[in-house]
Image (cartoon, rainbow over all chains, first blue to last red; front, side, top):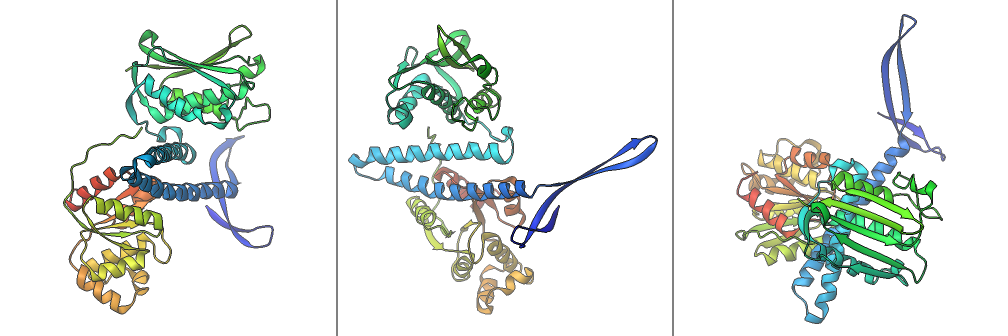
Length: 260
Length: 159
């Protein structure tokens, strides 16, 4: 329901009101419970979000098309760079698509795009992203590539988002000069990616780590990293996200996915 | 990971591309021409109507949100003149008599396929595109293969 009100400057603005009612019986008398909620601010956010996604997708459309055309027709020396820009544009486009599905509607609105993926492809992508990633500077990233040919079916972008969140958390918890280890196993007809770092997660934090809006960062983050890795990994991809932490073993986040 | 799905070539078409964003317009034209199509471009709905009034096109690729006249309005006007121009109300009054006369002459009794290109991927936006008479829609950003697929569906009367 839309009505009119005034803002702080006395200007006429639209108000969005959510009106609900239901009959209730009390002391043998019948009443109507009636509530009106001002949702103007929420509606403004929804509209702003729609405009944002519209404009970003419009720009991405041109960017993706232009880089695709360029990568098909450019000098050999420039081709690697152009292909890198095109690949990054595609990643950005997928990120926006996922975020849009999660923001405006609901989680189930995103339909995973399933492909056959090999472990080698995943590690290649991690190397590409983190070789020049500013947060990974002065951190030793060790990848244990013991089963590169192991293949499984999943949504590559979402899988990378789960692993990215694990890696970023590990990197942010690690002091300069420290090490992060990534490994994979193929036990029990599944594929399991593990990300290790030395720091221990305190008991009070570990109990709440997958809750929405709970941040592992000392200076206060958005609290979406661990929440989203659980949500993407389990609710959309159908895998299992978990972690262990101890003084002797450090912290290991693991994502396991059945091989279909 | 880019997954390229092979799409069989489409016969060359005479396409009107209506798009206000310069980069999307230039890139769209290059991609379509690369596939052998002949492309005319327009910057907004009104320019699109002026082109439709003067030339025969196989299909129109129509951006939805544009200044001056958006893709919805332009499509309503096209559909109205296909039926003789008696319907369309206030929207039709916005165009000149000469443009109305040329549109009526060129469009009456026919059906010009219009494909919406929208950066809004909400279900309600897609429904609106089809409700006002667009034949299909593409959600930005799209792959060239998707464009070819939708063009084929629309010009072959599959939709």
